[in-house]
Image (tube, rainbow, N blue to C red; front, top):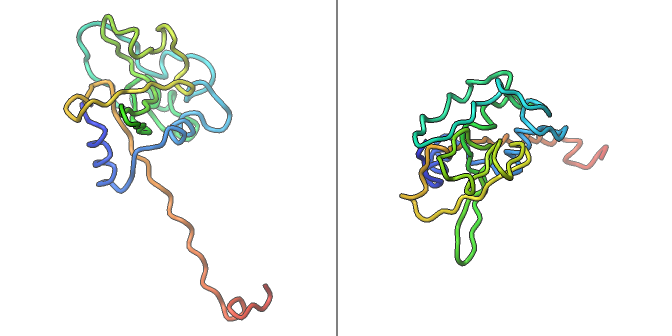
Length: 172
């Protein structure tokens, strides 16, 4: 997608949303039953993109390419294996990074050590794994295998106005 973390944040703000926290991403992908994949607890080749490796990245698939079979319990598409997705930023006095969730279906040749993916050493189901992406500067943060989604906070319910009996404390 070749979008930096700051560009993703700016877009979500412009659209009236924000980037999800890691726990919000996990809840949207996993639901409340502790599933390993957005679609359940079993592997399913038709539920997510085929894994690819090599020296040429062809780009991510459309978000809904494996819908509805690969959707989460909440109907969210494309949470596993298409592109890593930005969530929480972590910073200390020396480094800055962002937690990525979801995984990518592409790994360049010779990079198995950097981002474990499904089928690679140290990989696990997408609902239970993440990666830490070090941020060096805006011009270095863009990658075709890293993307984002925006979340929108639900407005708080309106509080009904106090009637004359409630305002006076009657019946409380």
